[in-house]
Image 1: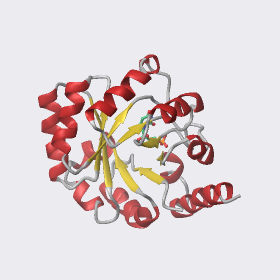
Image 2: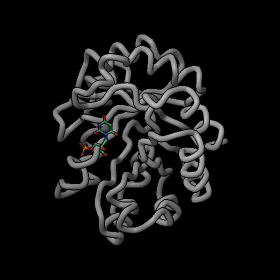
Image 3: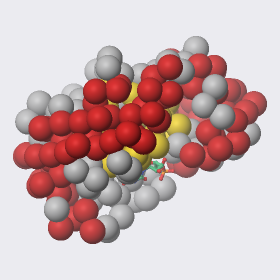
Image 4: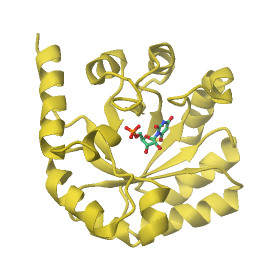
Length: 211
Ligand code: BMP
């Protein structure tokens, strides 16, 4: 069983971030960084974290084509494995992200782990994402109806799913419904033993899926 967890490293402090990455980097598929760690430390931390794991920059891009290109180029320059963009901004914007990303993987948000207006247009967002040529989709691991729907329409695209743990989703359920990877933050970094917590998640997947 390959590694199914993307660790959402939503902390501010540099030393805490690096320590967590060092300890769990080889147990996870990737580390996802969002604004908390970047606003405190700058984009250069992506390089430092990449020593321990692939890094996905979750910047949920939502702007005109020129601006998203500028951001994507900067992220790529710092060695990220992937970037997350919104897709509701439409085909031109998302195509610009894909073009600037080059070899970097682009994941687009088509449904969120909390109710949002995206729920009304999920199918259109998936079609736009496919047309733009993204590598994967972000779909909720804690809202089975939407995850199933995304899986049915996603074709070959990878699905990465937040909402497991602190937001109530269950890891094995999310994987059985179609998530290729689950994104987990608080229930790992707030636990007394993050490594053990990841091992427990991995065991629960293995036990369930090998039955
Ligand atoms: P946590 O496991 O602590 O709830 O973290 C979930 C992570 O996934 C956070 O970084 C959050 O920004 C992100 N996320 C989410 O929770 N829901 C979405 O719909 C999209 C996300 O990227």
